[in-house]
View 1 (cartoon, rainbow, N blue to C red):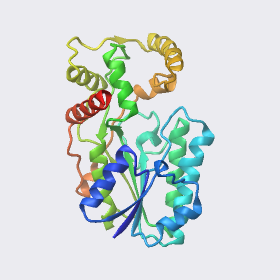
View 2 (spheres, rainbow, N blue to C red):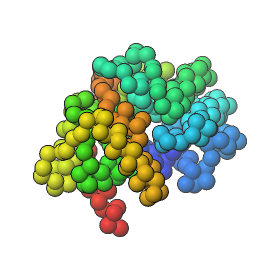
View 3 (cartoon, rainbow, N blue to C red):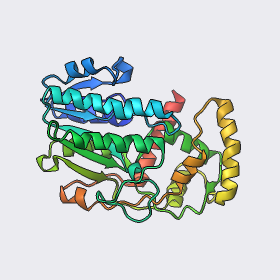
View 4 (cartoon, rainbow, N blue to C red):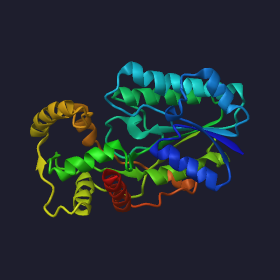
Length: 305
């Protein structure tokens, strides 16, 4: 069996590749670090030749990226993958999407909840989902809508840095923050790829627990050895603070993860109904506490090297 994985050098992609190899599956890696371009239609067609499946993870995740940049990779790139799969009659495509397609809707979301994307990134992933569904007669698919991913990546490195600096939490932190550990997401991808009954289905994947944001922050603080409760500020004060921090991030040449749009996403109700995933027999294995602990350890280890 041979499977192509786009974005194979990423946090989730590398874990997926590892799990597939443990099953003695030949993995064809397709990643920008290997000079593989998602806009190279001919190369994609060559790489997908005689593949039994394609796992499409490659995407621009940066919420601050331009519309053009996001669209080129997340939408046009997905179309190129679909065209390559169709040309080679690849029997299955698994597409990694995001719960971001729901926008800021409140309440518990299901696969049937109407999409209401707000940011350019969310809009690009929503459009990519539509493309995947439109090709189903040529390329059978499974779409996984993943909750916010916990793992030792740039996003969580910045969050750990902010928590260490005792920068206040904006708002009360009472909103639900259901997440997923990157290892659980990789496991879900491999699980659903081989499930025939998941063909042409969209499925939400997340951890079982539904902690509040303040619980996530307090867990981070405890694991970092910070004893005092997390400081908090109102949304109004938080926006002023975020503006000042934005200037600091710009001076440091770092992406601003406390922009106004980030604050809005921070305050979202991240609550998902996993009935469909459970019916298929999939459940996450990691608690958010263990996910955070392993991520912090990896981040701190990388910082020492």
